[in-house]
Length: 317
Image (cartoon, rainbow, N blue to C red; front, top):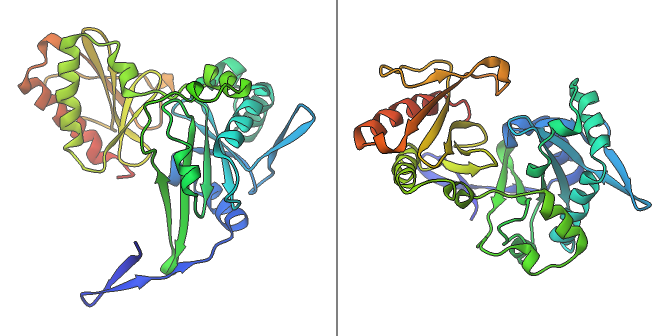
């Protein structure tokens, strides 16, 4: 479907422009990683591509990025070739990273002046992003697995300086890739790298907590149709683009609620400020632990009023 602009109540199609994926889009992506993906740029075409050697083979990583909210590494590859295998290349690069952790940590430390050790990085939440002008149906179908730490984005440039990064969503994610591919490299990566789902968190909850969560999350989504969830190892995050304005941590008999806001109006004094020394972002976090048995509709509506304050302040919505 073409993109239009409105001119005197008439729609005019905006023409698509030919772009050089590797020279133009790679540098543009690297210079705007935080805006596009909420990531910190480490290295790539804008400075110097990172290379690791595995089994006498050099792996040049197009872009290495860092997710500061998770302390995890994100690899980005830009592809023009429509014949490449998402699965094969994705697992090859992730395997190369996991077998060269020290080199990646050293690169991160040198680039952004950190003092991380290998233990400080959450390798379990590593992932790889493929960016292309267009993916084939075969490539799009290849990501239909629930435990695949790979994401596809089609990038298009248009007149008037417009550019679009469109995520390709899996058609279904019910099966594990290990059920179909027995390759040793795939099994090694999926053993160490995990893609988390809502169901992983729901398993921790008792029935009252499940009822509480269902009602609370429904009302969170009602704040804005664009809100989507992002489950990670410790919590379920809610965001419009890349920054969580709210996160939920499920326990058997309670839910931990985190909201990100410079200040909140909390007349019931349920929320406490998370100490800044924890280093969980520049914008303050506020936390409340709510017992599931006490979560009636009035309380849930009050919690939503607090969550909405964080949503209203979110910089990227």
